[in-house]
Image (cartoon, rainbow, N blue to C red; front, side):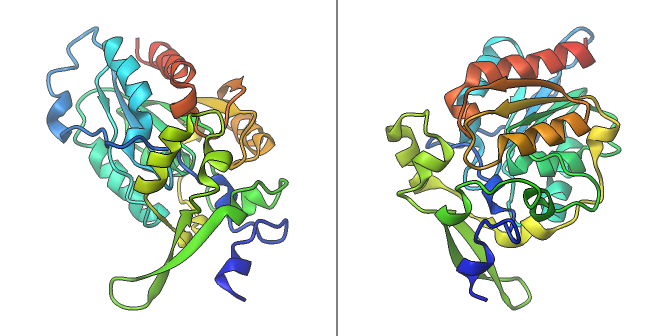
Length: 281
């Protein structure tokens, strides 16, 4: 079986790729030093919002959301998600969370939802989980298994597979979105001038992440909010609804592409702030 065949989005084998695209990125990454939140958590002050991006993008995909949250007085950090593997990505974000002082609202977009579901487990500082067009897997449930229950989206046929060397030997597979597909598949409601920049700066994701089984499902013990994108060509909206209902999440739906943080930053910000008010104040 060729790589192209292995990752084709069919009901038998979706390879979980149709669901993982991150929001179309802007040109500059938005991150902050781990100690940037020190002193921000005196009594009555707002929680820190930690934003975790998905595949094919970086932290700059949250720029519009970050601007609004900062205007409203929230400390915000958008760490880099390594995109190398679910276990290692979640461990990295979990270690990052330990450096943040005080309560946290943890937000994930697309594959970032898989990461936060595992990273937040047993962290008492995480008071709310917010899923933005994102995965919320159960323990032992791969993205591929979830995808196989719903009609395929367009993302699988829009990917290029590129080999890369693995540490310690062997070869892995990185996935990129084809330049001529990026706008229509990820962010059809965003300006093409913006998605053209995203194509040039996109970060690949290791294909193996989609077959990894999570060992935690933090949404079972932490209150969650979920934004469903009804025009999504990366994660089937019905799949999003299934995960949100299973998690008993506070759910809203918007007429958006997969790239809601980019095309609808106001709606994304409002949901994050609702979660912050409900669980921290």
